[in-house]
Length: 136
Image (cartoon, rainbow, N blue to C red; front, side, top):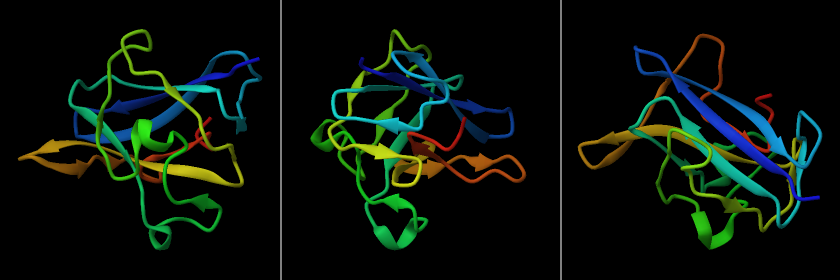
């Protein structure tokens, strides 16, 4: 059964973001593994939110992969504007399997004078998120 996992970026009034994820359909909650053909969406309460996947391995934790699980649909380094609701958002299809111990990392931010600017984080949180987690 195909899994649909949604990542929600909550941005507070001070520009600090927290990422959570929710299994919308097709799998156990929490979803710890994604296979080719599974679906992922990204949402936010802030209409200016964007994401991008990291390219360089040297800026990642030891248990993360560089790149994107979506291949050319959302290539690493490319920015993607996040929608307010799951039904309005782009549905990305997983091309590269991943799990908690071998996940992909995305940054959360917004456009600032044409450039990508990361949101701050709430105290104790790591910036961005991981696909498929570990932000459950």
